[in-house]
Length: 113
Ligand SMILES: [Zn+2]
Image (cartoon, rainbow, N blue to C red; front, side):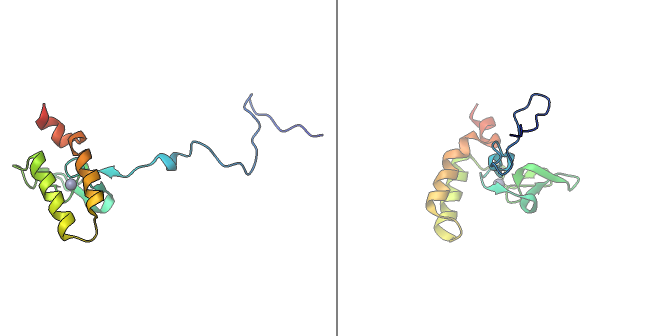
């Protein structure tokens, strides 16, 4: 009987076993820290030097500024509800999830202190 190869005291590697702690399973899309929508490379907001901003989407943030400065947390919630009513791409359930998450986002934490 062959003994499995041992490397530096690590347990022997069983080939074909699924790898646990797969980092890709933990990967979540980044959320816009203003409207709560997922942000991807294509819809990231822009900084003044035209580089991408990792925190906000292009609908909320362009050229290092919020597009709608006076928007309150409540205003954003209303806006999202309207979006759900008029757009088929997003369901009311999805919007409710996003709205529930809004107070945890960076932009609104600042204003609630
Ligand atoms: Zn946004």
